Length: 576
Image 1 (tube, rainbow, N blue to C red):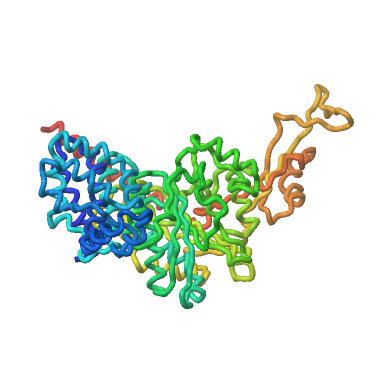
Image 2 (image 1 turned 180 degrees about the horizontal axis):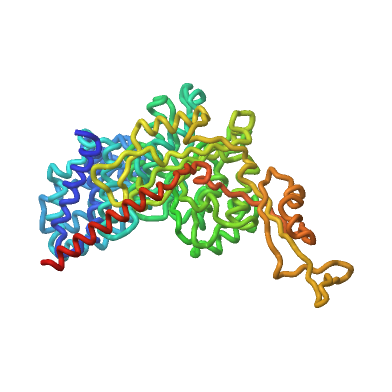
């Protein structure tokens, strides 16, 4: 059985437990119970093998001020449970199921209790107890369908199962499943590119690297990156850091980190834009799929206050439109880069199409692009196929950024890769996800990036190819006799005749003006005080393929044939 089939089968079995919630909960509320119980049951199964040792050690050291380290050592994990109950023993006393279950949850170490609290599960325990279904639901989680022991379900599979349950919950709630996680094949592609140029540096003994995701969701990106590094070099350690706004997905991410033995204290909750939990910290790699098309009105005051600090904050380069926060996450990623003197950093981040071109010269988005390109931070942009995400079918792009381009073949260059056609259709859609990126396409894209090769779907440009100068062209204001109006010895411009011209950055402004403007309006001049430099990336224009129109005779023949079919159908209708 394939990994995908096995995960789906297990998720089906767990989700079926929701039948016990019918009548007490509405379908869109099932996930509020199933998700936390799945996480708790996973912890329960992991701790089963050392439960007796933990209870014995707890009896010996519970009077100590700080027995935490001893209990973790006894459990063999970064967490433990000192309650005498487990899921099986809870069923031995149906009459006291609520009190015993609460005691069991309280018996977890503080790091697990924090996860449970983020699910806001307390109220659901009360509801299920009052409605008489708590015992039945917990009993279902002790059946073989809910056996989540690591011997039967790997950490990788468990991550997929969490994501599948979230997806079903979000679909039933008519919510954005895609805001919580990214398809694994997309993450694999991003990770391949993120580490591609560092294989040699990562090949030594006991290498330690750090990775940060400012919108980490369930931690899928952090997990795939860690798996990649371990395949590349088993002695290489990756310290994963992340921040997540949604409480449920934060809880799952932190649980996943605990289960895998990672430092879960590096996963923080809260709003990254208004409350950066990693202020002043830098990382070797930044990997993210932040929300796009989401307004930042709630964070406006904090963001604008930080922007006023200029280079001392994250947002000094510029601010995007209030209706779309994704470029704020891009600036956050840039602010977390190590300096080149300290080894530099590389970023892989997903955006939709708007950061490529929205905003005129001088606007926030254009100024952000200007900052990126004039500091030579952009390595590549990769157009992904449509319909590969669960919650959207729109065009998406991977931006690859680095401050390590100096002295390499990428210095002063930007690579555009159009991978929009490299996909295969799914047999069954998952939400809006109708396509997958096959392994062969991942390998092709990675190779094109690594070789910095040019072909039909990969093109190389200078940074300045995406810049332009926007000039304001003025013409004289004239009086009734047709003479220019003068004021303080200067010809006054006529606002109604004012125009603008956009000139490629590589072209001399005056030469362009004399060639394209003066021959048609000889009295015009440039208002240099209004001149601005802008940047945009017209991605699709560079990969446009002309398709000649069909011959008119063929179109006419088709129209005549359709008309004949319609005439025949109408005669048959009226004849009947």
